[in-house]
Every structure is written in structure tokens, then in C-alpha cells.
Image (tube, rainbow, N blue to C red; front, side, top):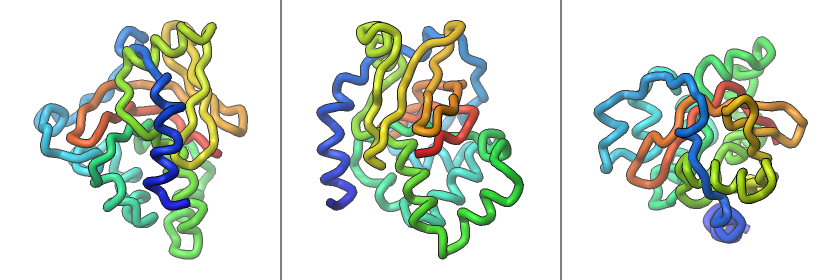
Amino acid sequence: MNFKKLMMSTLLTAALFSTALIQANVNPIHPNPVTENDSKATIVGVAASNENFSTLVAAVKAADLVETLNSEGPFTVFAPTNDAFGKLPSGTVETLLKAENKGTLTSILTYHVVAGKFEAADVLNAIKKNNGSFTIKTVNGENLTASLKDGKVMLKDAKGNYSTVILTDVGASNGVIHAIDTVVMP
């Protein structure tokens, strides 16, 4: 199944994905104020304009996902910051960026992408409507589970590890970015 068909198949599941991370008690990194409100910048353009996402942008390029994430979308991206990538074991990022690991890198990156545009309010509503946690199907095909802890939105990955959403609703012409503090793994 191609990437666009996979995204469309997850759109129905993702359509339920609705609530506000803004209401969560987050410590935002400061996105570039020009591109944050620039309706012409795509998700890749917005991320590339913010130094906090330089590792993510390098990974997206290495996985040949730039064209996909520049397409019409819409997409919601849970974008790991450079600090999030820095939490991985030493050498992991360098290894993933090698051409022979493109499949693994693509799998990890698409695990951070949801088909559809879901702002913070949508995520919070979905968590509340689903008794405190909400399963999110990613374009990778695997699930993330969103919940609240101490007023912050947490994402639980397939390995049982958690990431905290630290910045919400960074707009792009083809979706929205929510920054996270830890890379989630399928």
C-alpha cells in the first residue's frame, strides 16, 4: 500500500483525534515567529526554519520524506526536538542517517506523523472523551497513546516509553506541528 493510501486509511481513525494541548501546562521552545504564521510554509519549511528541529530535518532528508511532507496533506507531526534526538544512545542518529538504514529511519519518522490536521484542542478533547487516553494510528501503521499527566500531554509509544508534548499548534500550510521531548519508537 502506498503512503497516500495508508494516510487515507488512517484518516478515519485520526478523525476522532480531537482536543487542546494548549491547555496543557507546556514549556514551549520558541518557534520562528515568521514561519509559524506563514501559511505558505509547509511542515518541512517550518521545521527547517527552526534550529530546534535541525536533526529532524536532516533525518527527513535522509529518509527521502521531504516531498511527502511538502505535499498537500494535511498532516499532524509530533516533531522531536534536537534535544529529543540527543536522548538516544550515542551513535544512534548517525547510524540511522546512513543509506543502508533508510527503511528503519522511514519507519521511525512516519511513526511521528498522523494523517489529518489535529490541533491541541482536538487532542485534549479526544483524551477526555476516551476516559483519559486516546489511541492514535500513525501513518507508519502503528499506534501511539495520548494521555494527560500533571496537565501535560504524554505520548506512549509501542515500546512503552513516554514523550511529553512541549510545544503545540505550530501552523504550516499542510498541517500542524507539535514538538515533543523524546523520540517515539514503533
